[in-house]
Picture 1: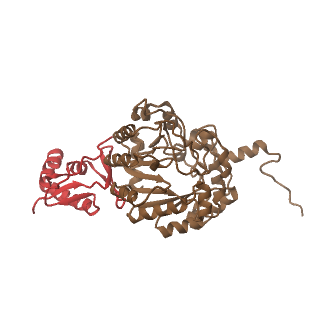
Picture 2: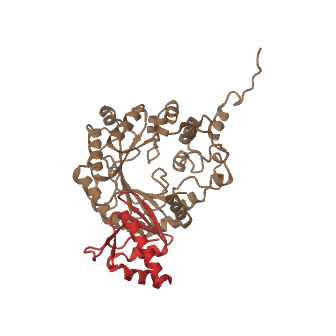
Length: 105
Length: 364
């Protein structure tokens, strides 16, 4: 499977609350909360770093997870958020990658 | 518990101001008869001051941001403020009268990812609406704005404040909302002016009309459920808080004053003199608000409505005590259920010439 690139949509509202990321789509008002691992993937979604590298650096290295398990979980997470337009997915790096979300609290 | 409710609970536990209402101006192009604001500019926050406040709110963890006024578009820098807010990834809701919104403004709101726009409509009849706003042609312009915004795919809520001047027009406004694809909300609350002037309270609809609103299925849904007698309050109710004001919500005036809520004008600090988070965490006023549980309310804690009443601590504060009853909400609880509030019984008792409970012998 060729690598993928993920970027955060600009049509969302996001904020960290107690270590978990809250995200709401401005398009359909879908509301998500991401756990610590998913938040790490979200924060790494700069549109330029390959997803395989994000899995290693943001998940496996930080949370001591088996790479195959991590990749499968991250793929499912990416697919779910991309269905709601919250994450943008491409097989090439994005030209204008999204800037960092409101990383607060 | 929904995900949003879970987030609210977590914000409460963490002491995070999850929702902030920022009035960017009190200036307005309408002069609504029921408005509680002074529309003169007494030194509004500058663009850079507002951007700094927004940065501080993002750092404090605020997620829901309501931009309101006055009329937000009276500020020439409104879209600059909005753009900055969206860069900080707030969930932005705008309250406006819409009369300055045309296709270009609606497109800009869509491009910036505004979550929702709320527009006030008082009547479906131009003569009635325009007499309330005192701006000829305002209903047409507000309705045009709703169409522009809806055509961009944005969500619109029509806020229908009910008062003596538009009693009976709610069905017409509700039908208009349906036609426009907007959500409809009705609010029978008229609040005193910010300076304490209560003269506009005579615009409140009479109790009998309020009763009819609360028993209207088209407005409240399941009437039997909505108007049900209050259940006996448990310890969870008495240990609970009256509302989110000061707990997970705050209000900032165009002059930087921080209040617990737009309807609760308790001066708690000013962002021109202090960091927002210092005010939020350390203001004695906000900490006093936070210290009040339902069981601490001298009259309301004894009231059968305590668990279901819409009691507004801000309206109570404007009546004289943030721990006291809000008589407008007592009236609502009574008109909804037919059961008088403890405050009403207390007042009736104080002025009664006859016993409240009368036992008469049956004459055969």
